[in-house]
Picture 1 (tube, one colour):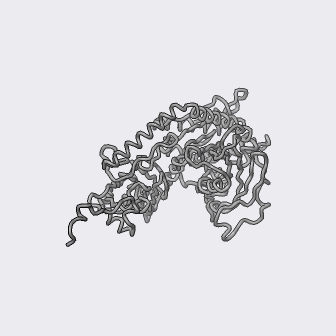
Picture 2: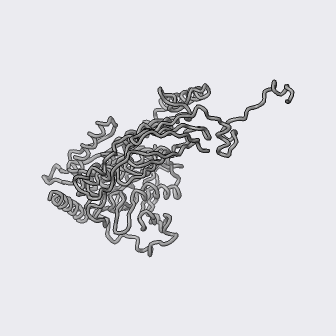
Picture 3: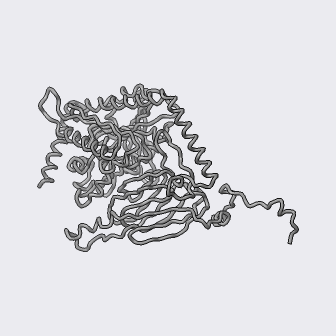
Length: 543
């Protein structure tokens, strides 16, 4: 009964918002589609993304129609060239809300005018009504995250001169698009430096009807987006910026919302009031985690383009101030660079002295890893430095680590205290890990896996790129009860909080020459020289 009431209220709010925009002429025309391109590609042409049509709309604005294998159809993308020409451009990925499309930010949000003096290339891909998630529509799956985070970067790389360093990749969006920006940032904190959300729902578990209704507009059936919020809670958490907030620690976060009230009117915009409450909760969550952020609750403002145009302009001014501060602080920047050089020199001296490097330089760490990488753009590069990551994905790449988890039920995994010395994983099933190139190629390392299923020790040699690849067991769990019901509900989560620890240490009895031979390489290939006969030995008569 409660769910029916929530769906009814949510549907009424969405219909009212749509009608209001259409009445004001601020809603994309329904006849704007890609049918003029003819039938969708099939066979080999449908296996890779490709541009089917492109046009120049203004001096800076370009429009593309791109076929996406992740979506199985052609969708639109608009791109604004930098207002201040750049040889290599930073990028803002700017997302629209539910009910709008890839044209909305330039047609209704004044994006072209607001970015006139900006160095950023602005890419505005279509997001449909897919809530920036994987949506099952009939027998097909519309994989919007893959389109936005894999295919769009490939599209940019092929067509423009882009800087893909994390400090020059930014995300922003309005309403559902702001949710997508924050979620993608939480999923890939190693790929982006900033995320902004304007009037956005950031905690899906407290806005289930809104997410359900928007997904149904994409063509999905009710309660199939992330499943039931009770029995499939892990899926909702895995797609929640609120629940994954700890992954956002190193990013610049900016979000805002209006009160849902206009001073001259007593009417209340319930949708804007709801997202404002979510903004308050998200801010409190970040404060509890000690994560710095910028939260702007407005005393007035509705869920409309007037508010979002204002918020985009305010965020862009924040970016401009940050750029000006960074460029004017040359003395501070020089000191930072000097300190980095000193640290690198110290690490090199430690390596020459055989004292260990990277995490081994910290108390209690183990030798055998390569040196820590320096900070880049003010953010620590985690390849070799310690980090933690929370995810609901069974396969994920983070800071050069690739983790695959074999499981039969969705679960939240904590990839914790990750460094060249090892890591820990929570959850059930089995895992396979490939490390970044942190280790000496050809050298033997002892890997110890300790968890609920026992202790397992085995040696392995780093490959030519200095990587280790190994498998292990997590906790065992009871899955798929024969007779599901209240008595067996705990089966799907039993064991998911158990911790499995992996320790990586350089083997003490390692022979470098033997290591190189085992990989069919000469020791010189790894930077080692063969033992040379001393002059004294040469003078001795041969036996």
